[in-house]
Image (cartoon, rainbow, N blue to C red; front, side, top):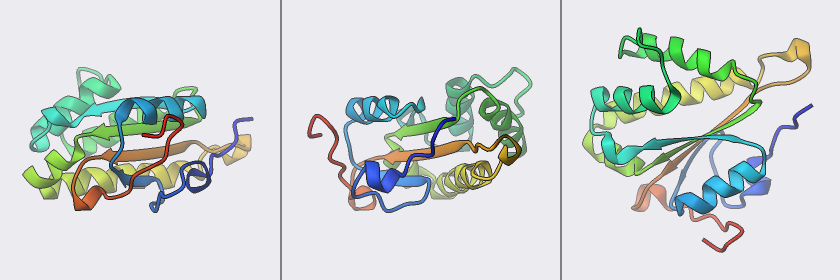
Length: 156
């Protein structure tokens, strides 16, 4: 049985519940999450400036099928299929998230809310099997909005 990771204990300084805005180097974060048995998905935020580019990048990141409709309902349907894999701990690292925040705040908020809703819902799924799925989202960026600096194993 895979155990649920207490993110605040493992990464002192985190303030969020499932959604974490941080200013950290990507490689040490990915390594720290992998060391805790998370399947890590990397979203390249440098390619995202609006809803269309968000859907393009996430479709590629998560391997959405060709029938993905590039809308929030389609995203929900396709992302639901991703989470049904064997992984019990999933981390999404959205690098350069600050670019989307400043370019299209409405789509940014919709995306963050969508990820949060999935994370919250996954906490209680599969209770019949005695195990939930843990989803953590790291919004990595620079600026006052991303002022949490984590101390990772290599000091980054």
